[in-house]
Length: 275
Image (cartoon, rainbow, N blue to C red):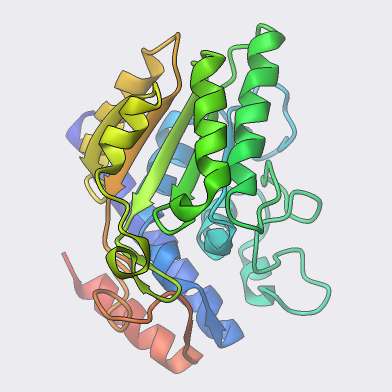
């Protein structure tokens, strides 16, 4: 990746963070922590890696993304809006009555959402099925999926992992947002996940570990995953929950937070001033 592209993607990630903070602040509460930790990945995927057409969200030749940790929907909406799937003004309607942007991703409501996600673990199983279907049809499209480290407590995640490896689904590239926090506290205190990369490798996946906020490192990992044709790929991203939001980053109980638009704008100003 050249320096110009890298700087442009960093700027996109910052834009996604700012839009997400304002979006949730306009509503008054929301899942700020897990949205902030995947902003760098979303910028990389939608602006550099995935084959997509915002003017034709259901284009059959597109790559697809399933955000199984569906509560990170506001970050996905911010990304889609910035990419041109729908007007930026829609972000002000997050989770309001009649909105097309519900709190969790819903493919029947939002242009650009490829799979509905709600109950943790289910989106990942759907991603595996989607990728298997593409393989059976001989299509080159890829399916990308994002799961959480807290979500990895779900047995359904590991059933899907075993199935995907057993069927040799090479068109599936997944990411674990390993931000070490979940709804009720720190992951290690709820259910220690151990060495996640070693677990995915043991399940037969091509596995890598990266700094999830280093776009260049993420880019190289995705390239290595794309090169795998016979097995699915898992990229374990070490991230910081709330990254880039000054009142949410590095604090406890940042899974879902209440804050008003004034506080959101203060956080946006701090983010704009940061390097």
